[in-house]
Length: 601
Ligand code: ADP
Image (cartoon, rainbow, N blue to C red; front, top):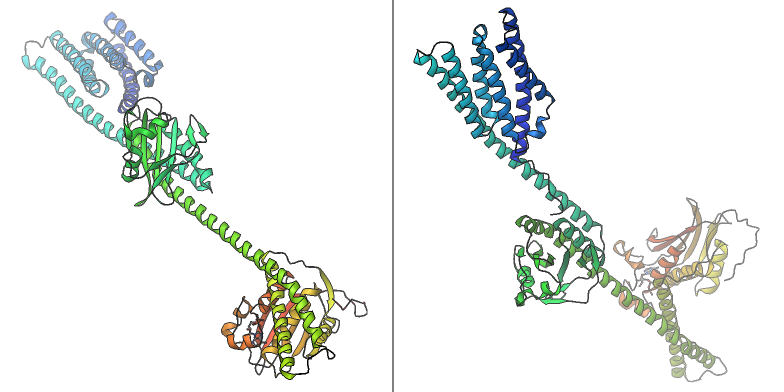
């Protein structure tokens, strides 16, 4: 395994506890030694060799014990031996001191204490051993004190030693059991944390990517690293869901490697196909040379492999394979980890797959739209020249000196001229629309007096609108061709749809913008259609507009042209009925009335 959690074992927990117990026992032993020393001084036995030698021996042992790094020793195999030696040293010293009659009473409680401590400090066999030694010491002391005659005086303390020893052995046993459980829990929590961290790392890698080509090497690389596998491959199902395709690149020895297309039939008997259909990951301990179901694994040069299905809920997405070119040392843990890593992987891969499909679809739609726009533009251009010559010919034939005298012929000729004009307008509109779609509308803004614009409109359109501009020298900053086209379109619409009403043009300044309005008193536009009329091919009354020669493109062109000049257009009701189209454009500041500006396009 590449990364192993630092698992606290029972052994470690127990050795930490025993080391701390020994340190505390050493401190208690110092206190005991000082108390016994005091007693020896008081009873004037201080110079007695049976006190001096063991007392100094014990002091030496305790100095050594203070200098010892118990944490280290207690985690080695020597721990029970060293601890037993330490306890026996104390037993011998205390027992020898107790052979001095004046100090005889000091040993017994200390020996009972040692019998108890041993239960927590030692393994069961060392504990038993120390208990026997303590019992022998107690027996010796009893005999030495001359109490051997009374059986009870000898047996009772010995039995007490064993009872105390057994009791602490029981406590020690329970304690060890508790330590096992809590160490196990701690290990599990650590393992879970590690799993989550890995899961998070994989999810974070996945979340950053935007395309499958980008994500696959990252994903497989991260998973291979966590599972310490040399080779990793992601297979995703193809569009018709019949095959699994190996995603290139695959991961080999820490590097992405481009591969030729490899596919696996979904319904085949291979282990990869089986895993795709299965719920859980599979561990192939040994890739068989002869087995048909191991073909892909063999092709990848694997000897052992972990294979997991990639799924989102119940929807299958593909399969992930990680493996090594040598036989079986993956663990069940690794298999489980692959299972948990494959869940977020499946989710993100499927999301990105879908995202890519949508992007591809959007790209194709854009291509089609572009083709359509190109087609419209080409056709319109091609139609324009013959139509211009047809109109020219009709105008010529319509001249008084050439016009036919017969009324039916005259009428037919006039109708042909009207229809040709209508066709010309449609072609012009289509050309502009295709240019708008391509974003190919050139804008050359210049300051233009609104009154000049209105005068120009008056000359061009078939009706004679009245106009009021306030202030007189109000000027817009706009492209002359575009703004003229906008106004002609609006005025001609007014003439078309409100034929019997006067049409007025207004210009004024508002919030530092130049505002122009085309007002009629015709049928107006119902509230529900006030926005829709600016959409392409929107005609409120089909039969009416057809008869009036509309294309349904005029207002959409008005809107697009206004917007490319950083302006807005809207329609409101005229007071008393009718439509008021309001165009707002950037104002041209500092233009003086006396300045001469070209008024012709
Ligand atoms: P069209 O080529 O049909 O005139 P437009 O985009 O210029 O296309 O106008 C869209 C529709 O808005 C028209 O078909 C008409 O029904 C309605 N419309 C435009 N201007 C007016 C107006 N001044 N009064 C009433 N209806 C109008």
